[in-house]
Length: 90
Ligand code: SF4
Image (cartoon, rainbow, N blue to C red; front, side, top):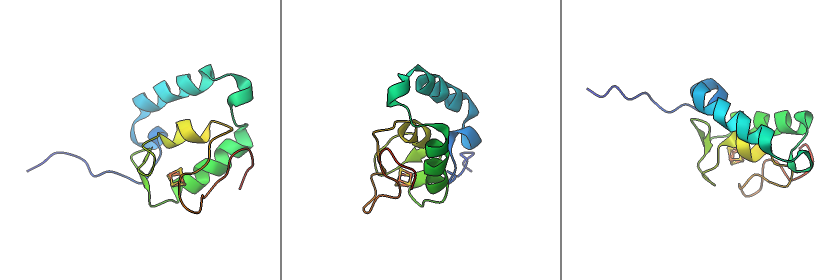
């Protein structure tokens, strides 16, 4: 019998708190001009939380941790059509 847990459709903060801390440190190290502001970040993560391409905090379309991708102002969702765009809340 396998003891592996089932992947969840959730962010790192909910599924892998230790890794989420590492990603949060990475986000904090980004120059402020490259970072999305908190409102944009949270709006993006709301899309990711509801997305069927999110597994254990990773976007399976691009391989990024959703929190890391959403934190970068000039990133966009890789889905076609994208669920969120660069720069602006969607
Ligand atoms: S970046 Fe886009 S495709 Fe990837 S999990 Fe978030 S909403 Fe889904």
